Image 1 (spheres, rainbow, N blue to C red):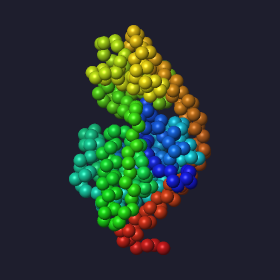
Image 2: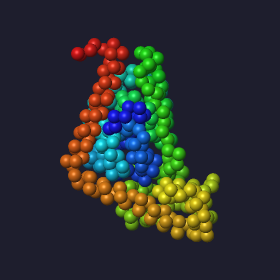
Image 3: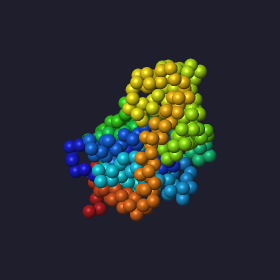
Length: 335
């Protein structure tokens, strides 16, 4: 991690729930790499969050290593950034308990994702599922992060983190930095290829709805060929053309072309040509990621070296934060 203290600090975490989707990649992960030169960056595989829903232990372990290798493959440089596995830094969980005592029950009960996940996992509505936004706040506030790269669906959680920080500061004196959202201007929301009114999700029952960043080229192209469009046969971005709008957003994100340029490029061409072009562009864009991932996941010793060093660096920062928090709230100092 850089020693340039005047740089603002960014924290971001991602759950180890299997291979990232194209939506995860365009909306968040792809933007992490370029931030490393401009900011002090801390990235975490948030496995503590993952266990709010039932996990198979062996699969969770595999997914966590896979996710760590993937963020490196997507451009995170462990020499530039602090990249670690959340459960390797116990300060997150400890701070979460302290912050939960500055969080109101009503605030948590209004969290949209709690309602959504409770509906999906009605047989396991556990306390962790209810309180995990406090752990998310602890993830951010433990580093006094200035910025948090988030998708539009995470705004509510960041606002809660700000509320918790403000309440703590008011009670114990100014301490926590008020984190601000860092939302990409474009490509922040990639929708399902089969139902463009819904966000792309790996949990979608239709396998053609979601592109995974480790899908091979043939699979990616096949999924885009089957993408839902409309009956107009005109490639242009406008209201009522959700399927085409989604494909144009994706194509723009991986090629850098504007919506106007895309409209011009496919003027007079059919949707078949367009969907094939989008599929090929996405596959070609993701090929270096797939190639680097295969090398990384085969080198477990290197991965361990990276995440161990990352955990040590993260723990050093958060240990100082937690020590100051303990003193502020009146705990007896052990030293």
